[in-house]
Length: 477
Image 1 (cartoon, rainbow, N blue to C red):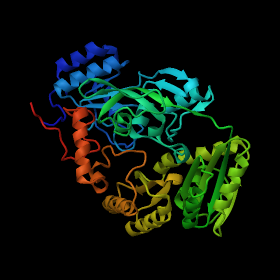
Image 2 (image 1 turned 45 degrees about the horizontal axis):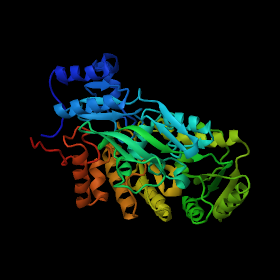
Image 3 (image 1 turned 120 degrees about the vertical axis):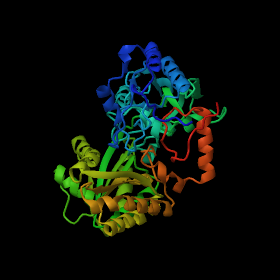
Image 4 (image 1 turned 90 degrees about the vertical axis):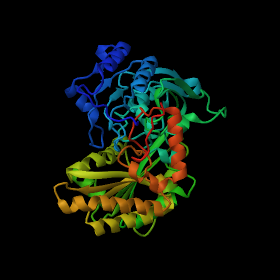
């Protein structure tokens, strides 16, 4: 039978609870319903309460917990800090939440090889601070960087603004230590930047959202901090002009380290919560960052200025100080939470299209907003075509509730028509699992499922995520 919520008066059998306590100690376990309740949320704002929360402190404890859960068919959902927006860290099947917040040590910083070894509960912000002290940074920089964990970044192949130049998490993890659903420990990758020994299981686990294995240690590849950095902004009278500017920027050799897009609705939010001077009539804004050596930074700025110059450009601005640049980035990072103030509910998607298709995407989204009478706010990482599409609605408005999901269906249809992808960095989780078949052919999805069964034969790891409902582990015992 498939792993599902275990229904008895205690949620979990007393014998299972006792076995888990014997592994980690009672001080590392929560069973009280009130205490467990908060571990049923993530940033998708969906909720399912777990029956138990466990805080392992080392990889041996993780292994033994997995063995107990596998033997007793207890659903196990790994959790970092719950910043995921697709419900990937919600225990939809109940059971046990394994929180990595106490496995939060930086184990090694090796500046000679540009390497840092960490446990999964270390936050992205802690990694950046420690790396910066030695003149390095770790490339993934999601908006939630100060709070999200490395384990969560690995689970979703997180990115952020810098991905346009430096790539996503998968390009900056050399190897992993992880625990399979059976409790067996595996090691993937290498300590070196090149290795072609065997299959690339590191890249397979990255982005698998805790459905294949639980990462207990990661070897991170660090990058030297650039000598110089400049933050630029460009405003336009039309979204078409801004989108065309993105295409031109990415078609020239001076690749920016960040290239962010905001449509007119996002700009209006900025006006309400930030005193940055933005002229009336602006329909789109680009935030651009360039970095490199002190000798080349001016050349990069000039190249970006040339690429954005067009009849519908209103202004091109270079931040005059670190404070002004910081204010611009603070404005960008505040956009997503600010949307909650405009509408009680939002559907937040992170679709991706080829950069040349951004104009068609933005035009199509504007048409869908008008067709369904649903406000859509668009912003995000335009440099790699990763646009955050936010459908705003009121759950108390019957008409908007009835049209929000059909509108989302058309958004996904548009993205795939433009040769795009349904997710760039948030993952699939629970929210998008019923759409995955639109992008991934049946034979490919079936192969993914068979791989899942090899890593997690009983199906305890994050059940109900990524794969549609019809995919279930069957009992062969």
